[in-house]
Image (cartoon, rainbow, N blue to C red; front, side, top):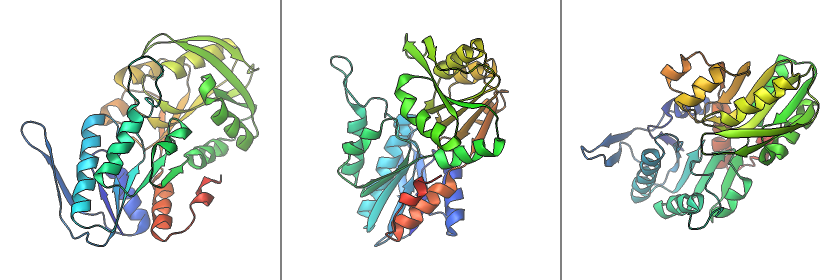
Amino acid sequence: MKIFTGTANPLLAQSMADYLGIPLGKAQVSRFPDGETWVKILENVRGKDVFVVQSTSNPANENLMELLIMIDAMRRASAARITAVLPFYGYARQDRKDQPRVPITAKLVANLLVAAGTNRLLTVDFHAQQLQGFFDIPVDHLYSSPVLVKYLQDKNLPNLVVVSPDTGGLKMAHAYSEILHAGLALVAKQRKGPTEVEALTMVGDVKGCNCVLVDDLVTTAGTLTTAARILKQNGAENIYAAVTHAVLTDLGFERLKNSEIKELVVTDTVPLRESAMASGAPIKVLSVSGLLGEAVLRIHDNQSVSSLFKV
């Protein structure tokens, strides 16, 4: 077994290798003057079980091309099996034709990964569960909930209510409320544009309660901060947020800093910029390296990964 990483999230890959007690594979990734990506694998992978760790986060196109080129290099170097480990699967929001003449880019990315030579996919919290059906190769879809729930349980918050910031996340919020033995509420929203959200109403009682907003992805934080404001207007005490993928922009950090959210808990599926972390936004980062490392070990040993879903 060998683990390699691109340039998107090397710290997470190193933590996974440390968990497994093996060295991180050596690979050289560089750019030509015109921006083309060049990759060279610096050790023998013939007949090996290879795992390539790369989140397709910002810059999404560069990181995706880098991953595809690394997989192609592994295939041409006669690796026995290549597993693409995408802690964050980019383009997942483009999973259907909701307007005329638009692409289904999530399916296109799936086709590209398979065409490059991927034999298996390991990922965390798809934006939509049905994305697994876009692949004709085995997909191991993990959840960050064991990591996030443990942190929330350790806080021991009284009068806890789990809140979905939109109708699409209600199923996830219900699962969290069941595990945490908490109440459930919903903030209904209407999106005005890619960065602007208008909240409409709230369903549920949060007066005097501690609230946890749960979602899979935060970018500009418009949905979360608007939902938090509605909760505060309805009498919520303290407001927290638990999100798997923090693909945060500068606008997102600024909104969080000035919002009603006391703490945003995220995972390291996407690395946060140091300058952004110093912005003063209330963010706590938890690592999924143990979760992914254990999954890699079980895939390599042909063991079940279903127990990793248990909280």
